[in-house]
Image 1 (tube, rainbow, N blue to C red):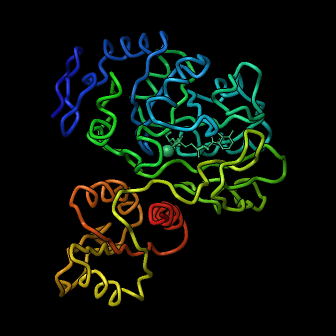
Image 2 (cartoon, rainbow, N blue to C red; image 1 turned 90 degrees about the vertical axis):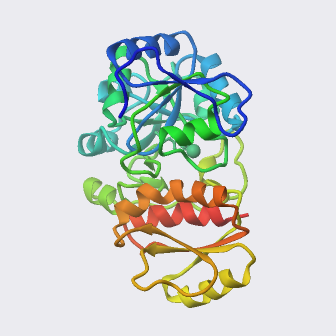
Length: 353
Ligand code: TXA
Ligand code: MG
């Protein structure tokens, strides 16, 4: 149970935490007023969203945004998503094309980020010098209240060190960023557990899916009545004028433990390989109906094969596997289609070395 306090709880990050203690806030009116002040004066706050936890700063404050990059160890070429309360707030930062208005009406607030032509007020650090800005309106109630109270657009990447697994619980934020940030708004575990779908609408009539998420390409295509293109994948960071998103990098969301993806049909072979590894493990997509034989540790992403359940647990499991000290992990792909594509996208990147 979380207590209703305004002073926050201090946590030492695991294991030996050197820097400042992160203060955890529960979202009382006094908490939100304090956090709004922190943001107004250029500070950073870790915020809950329905997808993953974000590390937020005042999006129109270049120095505050610079601190996000420093704290995450994120290269300045990787642009940030700006979180807004609603369509009116979005319209102050970008040109809302007819396609954008249609998707906003259908999916905001929610896990859909739109890449749109930016207005001049958006500082170059946010967009990595691009002519476009990525916008989304999150639906987590605490963060919506914070957006209202502070009245600011909030730039917020996922609250993890660059390249590592995204955080889906307050404890994940404390574990990997607790010595680098001062404030965390505790909104409990994230409802979806995978980052938002990103659709580039900067070329009218040609929407492009930059990152799969809980809102599927098929849903977007149906809402717009247009096919949704997929970009070429790249391992090379584009220059600041480039069209590709650095989030499309093949290697991302990477746990320390080497991961090997396998198709459901290759379960038996994966079990043999894991058993042959000194500290191997196998992750099944759903709980195995018979106890698997062999010496390898066994995990599963979902109890009964439910995609939403698996999505919610994917990043937590990747962190758990790192903590368990396996030398190699074989992990089964999700069934293709819908949320399964978003899960497989993250697993494939996590498995890329
Ligand atoms: O669900 C989410 O979107 C979470 C929560 C916190 O809202 N945020 C998130 O942010 O995943 P981040 O920084 O981890 O991923 C943002 C992605 C990056 O891949 C970045 O390259 C892309 O958005 N992006 C941002 N601005 C862009 C732009 N103008 N054009 C193309 N891609 C852009
Ligand atoms: Mg991220």
